[in-house]
Image (cartoon, rainbow, N blue to C red; front, top):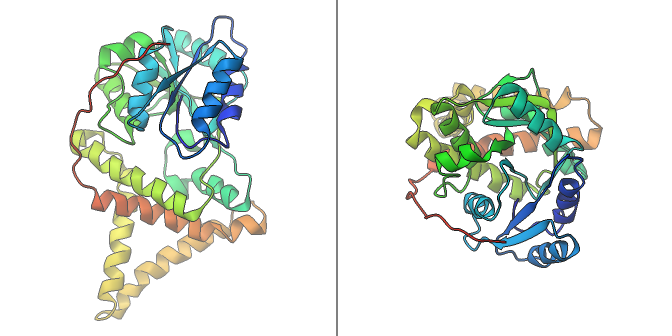
Length: 318
């Protein structure tokens, strides 16, 4: 579990992991990045309270380096990738291991079950679990079990991670998708099953949401530079929409008819917001949330700069 700035959620995430009913030993490795809050202190306290918890430093502060440091400090043959911003459902690990055995897959995963606490967070959760908000990725809202291009987080066979070299440390984001791409290219299977659910708390402010989705778009562009054949149609929709909106606004001074493009988009956003079964305080926030997610992702994709490869591998022991 790589963690950074998780003072508000870390104890809940760790409790959910350690409370799993699994017929075998469990060990939790926290890779702690430099944080401006009490994350590191809470992590040390959790390790002092339960011998199954181990803390390793992640000075780079990048998720992929943290995951590799945690992997190096662990010894289990099954590796469960968790997040400090969410909580695995009861029985998650047991069911995931069963699915690994039943399917022969290299990685199994399920649904990112977004659940908000404030009206804004609930609006983001609604957008994250809709096709209008995030496209056709099943891990956002569910679907039938089967092979998939990617899953949320993931439960891996250790030998697969070691054979493929772990997570790509030159990717700040999108490292999960990139690893799943390499698994599939090597002839392995990434398997989705809706039985596997991890509760996820969305970002709590518009600024944080915009930054998150800008980074998603930016690093998806880098992923596609390296593996263009991994492209899915849903990944082109936000940059195409962003380009169309920006271009139409610039051209509107000369050709007024092009204002139909932002008008159509605005109408679609309003319709998608009005038709969800949510309280009014959520629905009124949805148009801005949808637009922020789409345009931030698209802008990040369009403005992405090439990122140097290779930060090196790091090893730490518990």
